[in-house]
Image (cartoon, rainbow over the protein chains, first blue to last red):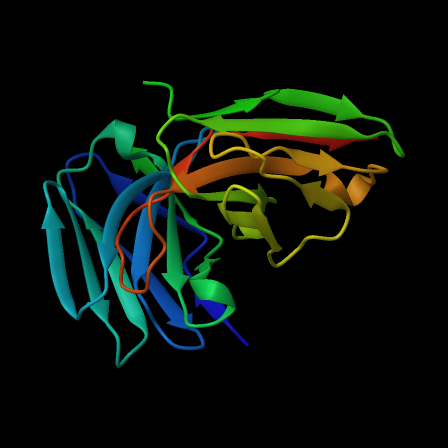
Length: 111
Length: 116
């Protein structure tokens, strides 16, 4: 079966760094997305990885290792507004390349 | 800059009632999607469309129907509402869905539906 695992909840301190992990088992691989979702709002796109390595975008970076079925989202210089859920989604080869979504990691930032 | 617009934002339905969730996008995207999001679960794809006149089932289509008569609109119909359909529904659209494409999906603000 296809599966994506993320920690349910994490807590970090304002100004610190946090790493949110995502492991996946899918039928083939055609890219991995990270989305941010504030409570009661729509998901918004953060990053996309299709090749191994690190993609940096301001305070956020995303890493991918296809051989390990593993990705992480790194958030630096945490701000209170980063309190949100972070969703990992993988595009496989089945079903017309639809996305398989993880349940999300709720990140709580403390002052 | 409207993007993806969903209505209504909230709705309470009685068991057995029907309703249509509206979704429209102004980005000229060919691909549109309906997801449901339940607590502690990942987004589940209900139906999707690759263009006007073309729709297909996703992972959890039972109890729902869609149509796509124009590029802009992709309404979701619930027939005979059941408590199991209590969820938050998101409509989304994207420009591309090609393998390896990083084109992201844009989401509407969601519809919180409760069936009692």
